[in-house]
Image 1: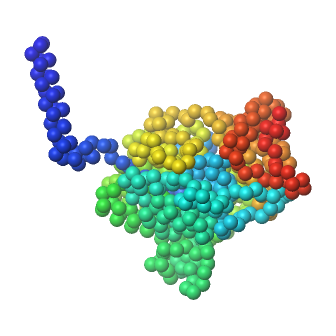
Image 2: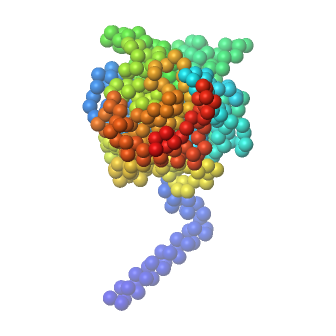
Image 3: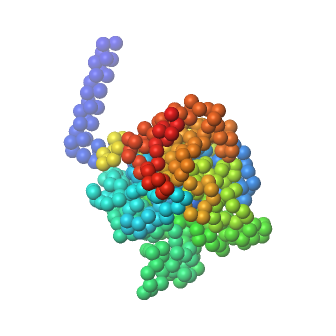
Length: 518
């Protein structure tokens, strides 16, 4: 026995000595021992609602699910994990800033969409004067006016060995400000991204809105090779994404691809590759056009997945599929107003579930349980910490104090996320929209959701588990619950100095929620 122990000690010593020599004489050996960094794709869709897919995110299929054809979303969901309670902000720029910074809207103060430098993108209406807010969006320059200065996710990934690629819609900041250019966020490649929130045209035959000698701020740049061609914008962006990834793949670097489609944002036009089948089914023309935009987006997802399979890199590529806010219901869609996200109430720009609940599918090869479902609450700012963790960056060095959490551990364990406070904040109004679209602050814990409406100071409390349509306001029944949530919301708004609107009739700042509900 002693002889065997002596032999084992000698063998261990020899192994350690050999390993030390390898580290000294072959420095690359140390690198080879590190876990391989996965490629990471955020596949971001614009304005896609929770129900705008053949993948059911509700506990049953609905007629709306049967309207759409998204076989590649189905394919991704069958490989990965579907989050049925995933949330973004109520419209685009706030969500995109949250992804890039890991900050909640209460913290980053980019409370609505951005466009022109130092200008409010929405008017003062409904007796509310909007407050000062970060109307210029993101800035990589400290002290830049009306902007959030932060360490951006792509910069963090770039500093940790990733090739960083942005394709499609950016909308991170106003024109003529740092946030207008995705390269100021750390993207090495930018094709198609500007300060514009939607395209001038989806058609290559119309040069995607570009006219030589004329300026159109919504024209999509970087796609000159496709001008005059019979090609749809979604397809052109997909081809460029694959081309850029192919170049990076040759350099043996992990890549971060932020493929951010302009689809399915307005203008709602026909993608003629798919639209006829929806006309043949008798859909309203606008709704048929919308369904073709959705299917074109889904084809893009399939093309990306096919490429990963063909190049044998799918097993080391994480895909996060998501939308940037709830779906359109109030404007632009066909066949009536304010019903397309049912059973969710309302839609984009509203604080009700239809405006903020989004489709999210997470695929992590060899980790996500196939066709799994997570019913825990996740929110858009969680993407930052989760992606950083996937990249092996356990303690990101950031300027900002990140508020989002890393949910990858729960994915690994196939466990529901724990209950915590989620918040939203929209101190603006939008003229001509449905009455559901009003200035608000929201706090959610578990199934309970408290909405504080700034204009008249009223509250609504919903049990979203029993009442997903938010039709039964329990504010009078669950008073103590509501008070506790109002107190926590007030504390968070104060701590983060969240901008509050002014009541036009009195000139007074809107009170904190716990100043009203005591």
